[in-house]
Amino acid sequence: MTQFTLTATLISTALALISFWLPVTSPDAEKLSPYECGFDPLGSARLPYSMRFFLIAILFLLFDLEIALLLPSPWAAQLPYPLNTIIWASVILILLTLGFIYEWLQGGLEWAE
Image 1 (tube, rainbow, N blue to C red):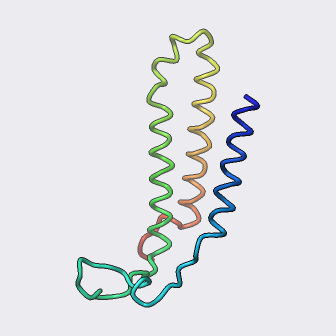
Image 2: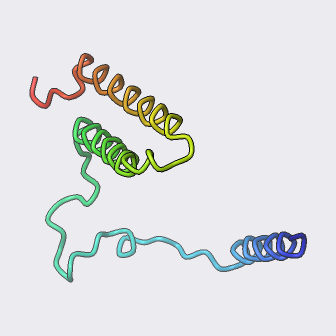
């Protein structure tokens, strides 16, 4: 274990030092421009997008994670202590539901005002 840690530390330190000594490329207009299959870009590649869309995407990820965590719940009955699993799954569900209700009451889910 000590040998592994020492080897990992030496390799990471060596790579960090090498990265400082390598030549730095200077960015120019061609390198910073977006590439669209050889055609001139039609607009800016860095357009801002709606914060509401970002919020909806984060909520989707949270509830997708909730489904992934709760799918194995039926097999909790086969565990030695199924009550612990059911309690933790219920706590997760309650927390996510309370967060969803809070976001709904704050108006974060209203797409058009």
